[in-house]
Structure formats: C-alpha cells, structure tokens
Image 1 (cartoon, rainbow, N blue to C red):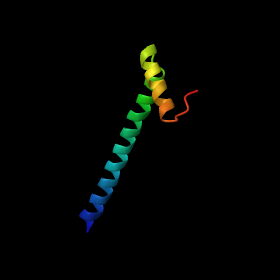
Image 2: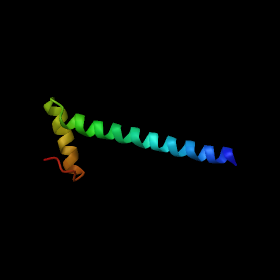
Image 3: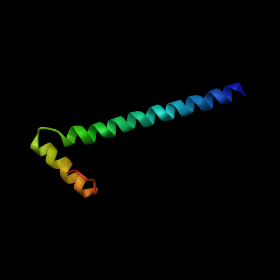
Length: 57
C-alpha cells in the first residue's frame, strides 16, 4: 500500500514538472519570437498570432 501511494505522488510530481517545462518552452517561443530583432522572424510570429486570434498589440 505504501508503494502505491508513493507511486501516485511521484506521478503527480512528474506531471507537474512536465507541465511547467512545457509552459516555459511555449512562453519562451511566444515572447522570444515576438521580440526578436529580425524583422522576418517578428513578422512571421506576428502573422501567426493574428491567424490564431492572439492579441499582439
């Protein structure tokens, strides 16, 4: 019974760690691409945000 409880806690910790990692990667892509100095990269991100109805201004 102890191992089942430990396994469940470990699974919850792993899920939270993965969710946090995915969130940080996604936020980094949005903000680093949006503020990129390259006009081409910025415009590509800008057009993608408009396509997804994501406010950008």
